Amino acid sequence: MCRIKYGKAISNNEDVRNLITGIILRQRKEYYKDNIVNVVWGYLDGSSVAISRNELNHLVDNSLDVFGRNNEVICKNGRYKTVGI
Image (cartoon, rainbow, N blue to C red; front, side):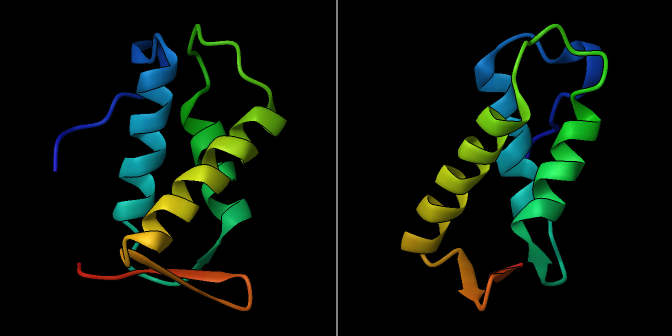
């Protein structure tokens, strides 16, 4: 897995998506979607990308949906678990 950018190094939406992907795939314990949103929000501090918390929620939802369809993430009762680590 490659290094992910954070803070000032994030300069576009693709960097934000890569950050979300990296954080989700690196989780070793079960988590809630809000945990991922909070972590990503923290890593965006200092970034020049203007993104609202609502937009970030939407991006995380989309990512979790894609990973779920590809059997990389399992969701039970709102708790997610990344598989295959």
